[in-house]
Image (cartoon, rainbow, N blue to C red; front, side, top):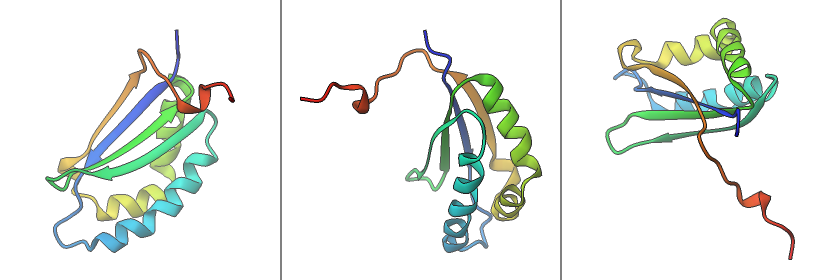
Length: 108
């Protein structure tokens, strides 16, 4: 059984925000998460409706919740919040039920 946790944050940008400003936040946020204990992987995508999906994999729930608390205090968070429509934000932490990775395969 895995203890991995997926953090999914969905949100929209404020209507007057240019997407290039969001792109400027990626490096700051990536640097922040890479420094957090238990960080495994992060990706961000946008669906056809313009909703952003920021997905982070954590080693366990303690790492996920600790990083979320630290993120709220970070400059990267403050910058991202300035771009975000606050009413659109949802945050979920969910334990992984099953997982597989390509890098788990044996070399030929």
